[in-house]
Image 1: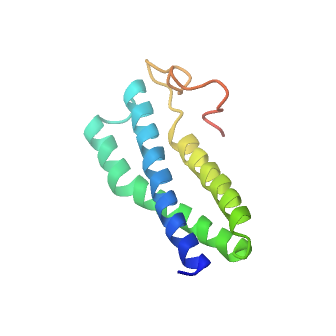
Image 2: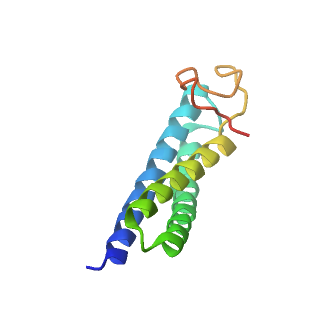
Image 3: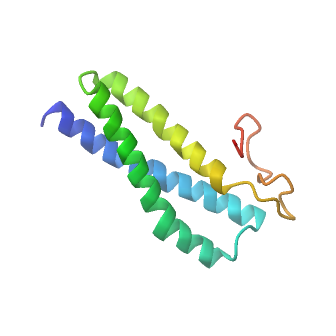
Length: 120
């Protein structure tokens, strides 16, 4: 296999994993804060809308990184990973943040203080 095919497979697997982990974190935060309509509606949104859209956006970011830095695989992996985490944090920040009874600030109590959220 060529280096570009390996980078494509690694990127596809990693962006799918990041999308799933982001959806899991958002679902746990919504559940802890009792946000949204109910768990079924929140889960349906996360499963059928959030994960596919975030995976497509992350894949576009990964392919753009590959197009720009394709000849340097290590730099491409580091920059692509950093961009994937940044897009994931932005997606969390957009959907996290409504003040509820259990989370007056919009952030669950277990959220680490060193990670700013909501970020905007």
